[in-house]
Each structure stands twice: as C-alpha cells, then as structure tokens.
Image (tube, rainbow, N blue to C red; front, side, top):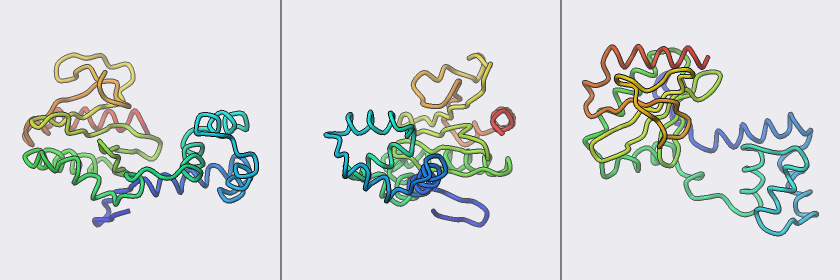
Length: 193
C-alpha cells in the first residue's frame, strides 16, 4: 500500500489480506488451516479445487486466495500498486494528466480508496467499487461508473467493454474532468455508499 497524505493506493495484497480475514470470519478456519485441508484432500487441478471449495461454502476472493495458495500467485498480484498503475500508462504518457485529474476528483469526494489492478484502477467507497479508470486507447481514458438506473445519453456512454460500470465517460483531456464530470462522479459515489 502506498500512502500520499490522506491518499491511499492499495494493491492486491490488501485485497488478499481482506479475503483471508473474510475466510476466517465465514468458516472459522485460517488460510493455513484451509491449506492443510486442501493438501489432505488434494483436488486435482484448479477447476476441481474451485468446485471442492464451492461445495464447502468458500467463494469469491477467498476462493481465489486458496487457489493461489495451492497453484501459485500471478505476477501482477505480487506487484507494487504504483508499479501496476505506471505500467498501465507506460506507452500512454499523455494520458497521465487525465488519470491524475480523475484521481484528484475522486479523492475530493470523501472516503475513497484507490485500488491498483493489472489493467485498470478501481475507485472504492466505504461500501464498494463505484468507478474504474482505464487507459482504453492511447488517446482516451474511460471512467466506468456504477450508476444503477442510468442509461447512456449525453456524456454517459455504453460501458459494455468495462468491468463494473453501468455507463462510462470518455476523457481525452484533463479539461474533460470538468464540473459536469465531477457532478456525475459525486452522484456515482453517493449511489454506492
């Protein structure tokens, strides 16, 4: 986790630690205890392990965690959060000011955590992910918004190509992070807190 004042960028390690806590809270067993069970049962291969865990009530990120424990962690899960974000913009230097303007707008909303993913950045309210930021092309950053009930129209475009977004806003300049964008981002944050 990287902190910049009150600004916080979390990586996958934070999410895996959270998954471990949820696993213990839900099942009463730690990751080490589950690893022992998995080792004793030895379901062959990842699909069989996932099925076995599902049958025992372990799903979501807790299941992913146990699969990674058994079969190895993908490299991006071990990367530093800032490195993940830098890699997303390595060949898109002109988009960094747009990304920075979006993150500044997000941090101004209140309790927001930035989570680095392999191909995008998640913006998370105290309750859930409310938006994602993705360098979609070399000339555009898309911000996917989780705005239930909102249909594409005006600046709100279809978000079919983005995870976790019901609509998206295309940004080609830091100037596109204007008052209207900030109002929509605020609406999205409030709908998800």
